Image (cartoon, rainbow, N blue to C red):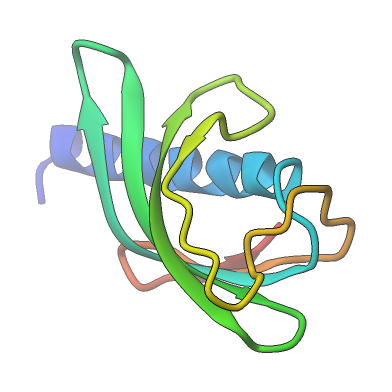
Length: 107
């Protein structure tokens, strides 16, 4: 991987981390977020992300959302609420993350 590709991956991982902060400000009771796919749109300057989000009851929802760097909430997301995972509110606990490159972290 050349230097430019490494920089792009680092930017993507940081955007994923920041988007989990925004998810925490959008949904309550998040336990973990696993990124399945992340893409960047150069025209809009936003990221499109597909995640598997798990709540404290270990119920999951797989959905996509848009994230723009510097925002504190997610304003555009697909509603997939079969189990009540996407409950609006705030998450105050630590959230486990599995990034699109397989690395793990917490926010």
